[in-house]
Image (cartoon, rainbow, N blue to C red; front, side):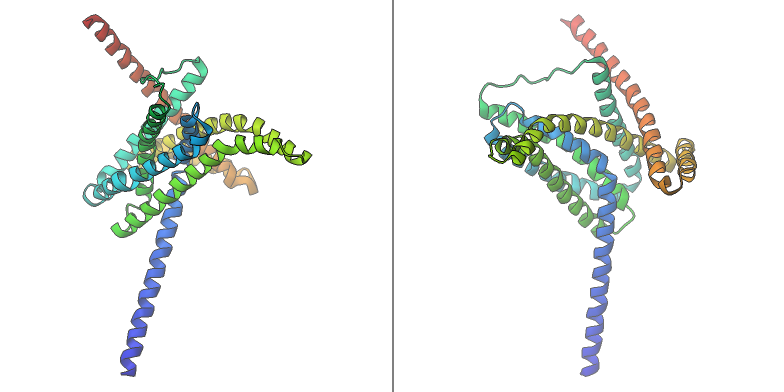
Length: 317
């Protein structure tokens, strides 16, 4: 009886160690996948605050809450099952799909750069309704549609990092990444959106120090938003370029990736203690250059197709 109890305890201990190891694997995979998706996360954070512009300050947090729930629904109900099915039945398609996503990131980033340089902006297709409730619903729907694309990129990048792990580990990792990134992104967005209100409140206090902090927040939030948009665009381009480089390397076209790796190694070795940071900057910069070139070419093709279609529509009428 005693020996049976000892054997049972040994089995329980073994299962506990196995579970702990599995949790460590999941935690490590989630951290790695989340880090890989950082570029898309930055852009998501930069994009979302614009959806509450022009709405009542009292509705800002509820609207962000609606968008966050929509984002979580996108990730868990639609994208997670699709990712797991893809991993189980068509793992060969992960790299090409990631590259398509990277191409899209490059295109979107290049479009923003082109708009900034030329001053041209795309007109919104939907006219803004005058009813506040309808306007809010339109903004929320638009934000959730945009989030679906960015969430698909996040989940695809995360899947690419854990595609060689058991399906259960993949599922748990993707759930952790989805919940953590959604909470992080929309938590930061809520802080950004309400920072100016906090600043106005502090600026009305009696304390000179609090007034100074409040005025600093009021003046600093627009500047922070502009820089966040710039960083988000840069992140889209270098992450997209990096995905294209890595995907091409996996598909047998290793030349461009080897050039970038070699340049980063040379720069890293030449800078001693700062070598790691310098190597990362070189890799990100070269990936960004490649991403910008590819994205600009895609944007050129898309614009030409749009012009051709516009000409056909005009001729038809």
